Length: 389
Image (cartoon, rainbow, N blue to C red; front, side, top):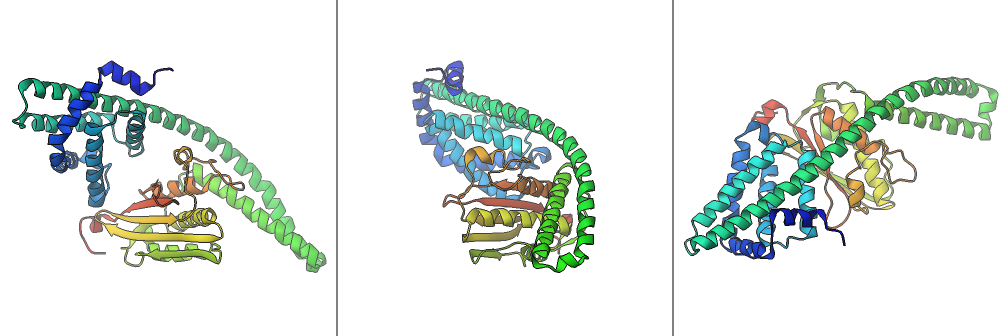
């Protein structure tokens, strides 16, 4: 059987089973200090504006401290197998998504080396040789971590560049086709208007078909508009933005089956933002339509809103089947869809709209099944600094 990449990396740094046992011995004395190490780690990041800008708010840092402790647990406990490798690859991809520069990875690993070495230095029961061997094992596993992160970082960065090139070509094609299709659609709309004024339009069958033609022309125009919105930097109308009002307006455009329970909490208490109500309405409509289609005729769709220091967070969850791992990585790409009817513009357009508002959207799987989308929008600077609404 061919050697896997992880096996090759372990062989390259000389990581042996004995190193694993030494790390587990280090875990015994280091685990009580994991929380303190996490505090030092994130205090160092928050002290550097360029590094901390990838993080959003105190709540996010709190989650990350817990995640770092889990990371240290597996780092020293193992097992150092293919599942371990895949988990570490996901961390590398996350760094690409949050645009964390690579040099901060090395800086962060240096902080961890220092803290673990301090643990080794301050443990009185080890002989000098035992401490040396533990330190060697630590360096090997941290080097493995960096190698995995850099490998996946480079892999995902190259994939991201390829996607940008495809989008550029896609944009040129859409711009040309969209312009060319507007003309025949305009002719159809004009002819339809004229036909509706003729006596034949009062006949039931004719009226039914004229209505269908009108609906399909409207649908075609919407698809063209969505495609064009994907490729052009549509300017924002910077005005007062009340998300509870935008949500209520979006609900008027979405059909909710009788068996679907849709609820929202926390919207009324959100502060007033600055942004484009029309574009945010479109984002809500797209997300709602996706969620309702996912749950089918029976299920739940729940929106939970909250405001913390620096940002507003919206969490939209549904009880549908969720999204498989292979699809998650491409779900925000244009033309990526799993629907029988659909061209894959809904989520990419939502992402584009949020980026125009200096916000983010992230898919987070639910343990209990279903999909969860987390949207974050920055608060105006006055509110970010603790000012009033």
